[in-house]
Image (cartoon, rainbow, N blue to C red; front, top):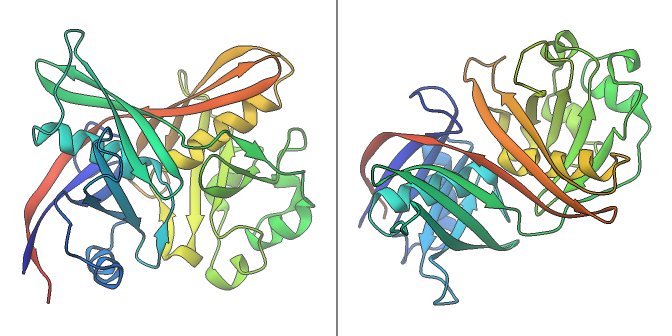
Length: 299
């Protein structure tokens, strides 16, 4: 049998930059083993399989696979799939040029707001399915060694290294410079002792006007040597930074660039809402461009 697919580059407005994504918009009939093989064949950081929702009030149910395994939640697949379904005519804007949908993922329902311009979906913002959380600060020396760095390359102040999540957990590591960010390396063997398979490196020393954070995401244990743009990690980072900010209230925002070191620059907008000292939600937004469309034969 044949299934329709399309690919997009997400968190960008230019083809061949951003994060590649494959989407099968009508995936009913495929089992998990077939989905995993298809994801491995595409070789994108993630492939999304769109299924009928469990709750008829929601737009669709998503299953998301890296080349190595299924994940409960991911940002660029959610953003890219929402925009793809809108462009396929499955979402219509209201009078204000917006549509509000819910996509079901293993981590929980994910609200998404889609912005339209001239009747075309151009940008989407997701709210993470779980309230942001983070763990205690970890000993930096072994983490630096796993990354091929010195302990002094890690930022001396701040809450990292630590784990953080809003539906998918990451090891967060803040570095003191863009140079250290570029020098970091991680292979599967070095990653094995780390507390999470996905490591999100970031620096606030960007030296770029309008960009507060530059990041990289390394996940060789997930079959992704490096990810060009990681929306779930950006949302988790927003939650972490807001939670450790001394201000008790605010809608905090960060513009994040990622993928620069691997030649696929990506741009993400991350937000965290904090009330009475508690972070209550994290959001991430971006655009996507279509790249390919066709059919894949399975069986």
